Structures are given as structure tokens and as C-alpha cells.
Length: 604
Image (cartoon, rainbow, N blue to C red; front, side, top):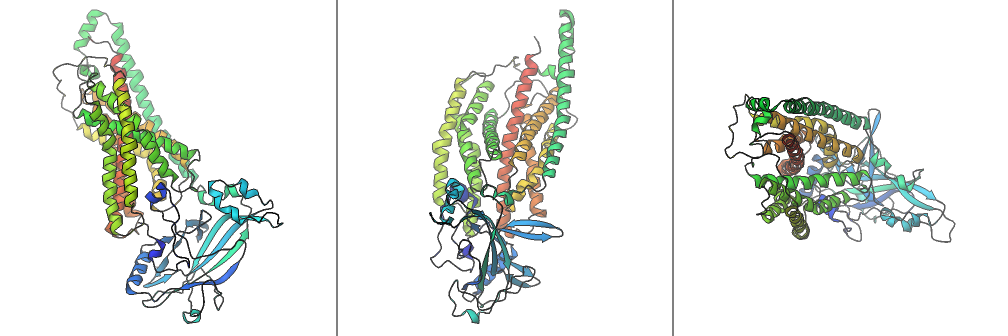
């Protein structure tokens, strides 16, 4: 749950707190950027600068500060669009964090970090007009930092921003008459390994800072590299290798089914003469026995069409977004673009959702166009409706906690407008094309009386839910990195790996569903429609269980039921989206397989 920096009793800028303009993605993520009281002058080192002295800590502020320190809150600072980075040494290797903690609890005392040591890395450009060439979106603010035209002075550009937080004991009496940005009476020694400023009720806190500029060889285009260093790329390759093994194993099974069983059955069948064929028809076994029932309309056919349509839309959104991110269009330097991209692609792909759902609806109804508008409407409102319900509930929790993560009412209105004025019409357009397109003809006729399904040794739903473990196996390593990036505030930038893992996941889901559908048909179970959807969709159950496991073992610092409710709410939404997307992959691959299987066999 993010909060405004100034909700705590800290120094405010002399000119007052101002919000910077944010895009849709930043507001949805809860990023609110405000101006800070720290002032920097290009290439001017300063030390022991007095910032301000807060008023005596009231009981309420004292409690709040203790609570935020307990909850391990971090302060995030941005200079020229670069987040402050903090290096901590653990054993023999360096850990990188963005931002710095509000304070720290040692034994029973709470200490606040009241002195910041900033290091700004700058790159020197001899030509005064270089920054004008570099003035892309990210660089717009740098232009004033160049030397004025006609002067011989070099221009500098900010290419790095580091912070070391210290807890220093300041004497409140000695700063009584000091104004902001004047020098502190005595030198401030900043030692990050010791803490000295405990917070006490009814006592003020004095804040100071120092700034040091360092010339660096880092060039402007590669200034984000420090944030995007790929740690553990071996782990990502291991994850892909692991997925490939699962895929090869499944592909082997699928190949055996196609070549050995289907081909063998068909060739044997075609070699026989008419009499032998008639005799063999009586001895048919397995999938050929359900020929008159395999295309019988499933129960709740409308709901299945709606879920497959929504799944295709979500799948398309995920693939396009990850592809654009992997190509570098959604850099973390431009905050919020990932969310905006997702919303935009989701709305445009409403066309595909309407088309797939209505065409499937007409296929199940043997070409009947009746009811296609209602199917399109349901597709346009089903998943977005669920998402809207979950997000509104969570938003009330955020409003109640005065968090900046709460979506303002005006943005709610914008989102509803986008849903009903862009997404819904596009879905109806897709539905219209689906109603115009020819429906898929079934290769065999359906009997009037349904065939009895023989008793199974074990419940078929057990197989269906067990099938989700295979797609989950291809995904779970990458899932850890994604979770850390969403909940731990780390920058996730291995979209290339994510794209590969995602494509592998889609292939595994298609194969799993196909194998399971074949197994069901072989034991004369012709109710394959919903089972093929949930065979690959059940991966969502394991993803949700993994989220719960992550909450218990990784997010120990989450405090209170509100944070946990938020986490679980977002996890349910994520699991549902994955269930729809992967379920539609499984269903469509099974539908193609069953259609292919029965169109290649000649049965009277």
C-alpha cells in the first residue's frame, strides 16, 4: 500500500507541495510524484546542509512513524527521471535497492534516517548542444543543465543517482536560528553502519543532507543499465530448459497418439473390405464409439462461448504487450506505459473476443444466428465485470487507509467510459463479423439419444485438475521474478525471457488439453468440452496456491488484514485472467483435434 511521503512528519518544500502530472498507468499503480525539499545545483558539491527541524512529534505522528518503520516502508526519490539507488553489501556481493528505508528498529528503539548522502554521477559533454540531440521524452528536463550558448564551459548530464541514508544525532538547540539550506554548525559524519537518532515523543527531528557530484564514463543512453542489470540470467535459462523438457515429453505423447493410434486405426480400417468393415463396426472400441455424441452441445454452452471469447482477448493482450515490452517499447524509464499498453491492447482485441465467441456459439447451434448480440454483450461484460467488482472492492479498502494507491473517482469515470464506449462497441463489431462468418460444419451427425458413459475407475475431474501441474512446471521459476517485481518494487526487465516462457506455456497448455481429451474419448466419455477448457485452465489454481505460499514465506513484513486482502484480491484477479486465457488455448486446440480426428474417419 503506497502512501504520500508528506503523510509522515518530514520536511516540506518552502514553496509548498506540488504534484507532478501523471499518466493513467502511474495513477493506477499508485505512483504519486511530488516535489522534494532537497535542492541540487549542477556540479556543485555541498556538505552539512541543514534542511529543517520538524515540530515536536505528537503522539499520533510518533505512532505513525513507528508503524511505518515496522512495516519497512521505503522512500523513493527521483532525480531527472532516475530513481535513487542504494547499494548494500551482504557477505561478498552487492545488493541494489531503489529508495531508502524510512527508519530501522533495533532492539526496542526506533531510529529514523535523518541525513542523506547523495552521489550524482554526471557525464561531461564538450559540445554544448548534445542534449538537444538527446532530447527524447526521457531527456526533456536535461536541457537547462547544459552550459549557455557561446560559453566554453562543458555541459553535464545526469547518468546516475545514489543515496546513502544515515541516522545522525543532531542537537536541536544548535539549529534554532538556522534557516533552510544554511550550513549545519558542526561537520556531519555519515556512517551507514551505525544509527544514532532515536525518535521520541514530543521531541523534534532535525534533517540534513550532502551532495557530491562525480564524473562518470556512463553515457546517456546506457544510464538505466544499473537498474536493469540482469541478475541470475542462468536461472532464466534453466527455467526455459525445464519448460522445453516438459514440452518435448508432451509432444512425444501427442505424436504417439497421432501416428500410432489414429493413423494405425485409420489404415487398418481402410484396408478391410465392406463385410469386414461391417463386422468391425460392431467391435469398435474407444473413441469411435462416441462418434454420434462427440459433437453434442455441452451444458451451459453460452457460458463456454463467453469464457473462450474473453480468454482469446486476454491471451492476445498478454502476447502483444510482452512482445512490445521485449522489443523495448515499454522501458521502465517511462513509468506507467506497461499498464497503458495492456489496457489499450485489451480494448482493441475486443473484436477478436466477440468474433470467436459468436462463431463458436453459431457452430454449437448448427449455424443458428439467433442470440449473437446477447453473446457479444456477455463477452464484453463478463471478465471486465469481474475485474471491476474486485478492483472496486479493493479500492474501498485503499480509500479507507488513505493510501495513494486508491484510484480517484474521476479516473473510475474514465475507465467506465473506456469500457462502454470503446471496448463494448468493438466486441459487438467482432460479434457481427462472427455472425456473418460461416459456422464450422461438424464432420459427423449427432444421435438423438445420448449414449451412456461407462463407469470410470477414477473421477475424470481428478485428471483435469492434475493436468494443471505440467503448465505450472514450465512457469513457476519465472513466476518468482514476476512476483518480486510486482510486490517487492524491483524493476522487472527480462521481457525477452518472459516472451519465450509465455510461448512455451501456451504450447504446453495446448498439448496437455489435447492428450487429456483423447484419453477421455478413449474411455467413451464424450463430454470433453468443459474438461478441455479446465485441463489447461487449472494451471490458475496452482498459480493462486503459489501466491498464497509467496505471501506466507516471502512477504513476512505485510502488516494487517488490509494489505493481505489487497494481495489476495489482486492474486485472484491474476489467476482468473490466466484461467480464461489458458483455458481458451486448451479448448481451441482440443476442438481442432476432435474435428480433425472425426473428419478423417469414415463411419456410416
